[in-house]
Length: 97
Image 1 (cartoon, rainbow, N blue to C red):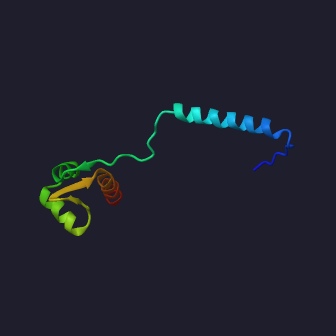
Image 2 (cartoon, rainbow, N blue to C red; image 1 turned 30 degrees about the vertical axis):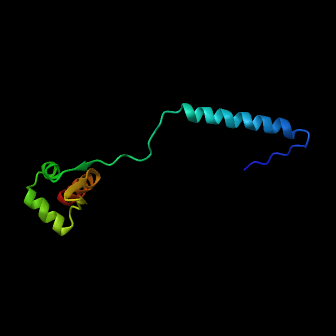
């Protein structure tokens, strides 16, 4: 970090300049389009998951039991994260090729 030496007499002018710079930065950030750093998770039903993986519902059930897929339970419903589907596809592709 660069150090700047100012005298006591220069302090009000330096503070004024600093306040202007901070105001400019605030305006730039306020005008910037909102960009979410976190992608909203999508969820799939068991039927959608099986369809994407081109497997039967029975196979999906077996994969759940083996830990290959990890469904979320919401009450009596099962849902799968779409991000988990993408990981399974990538892992399957590594094992095949």
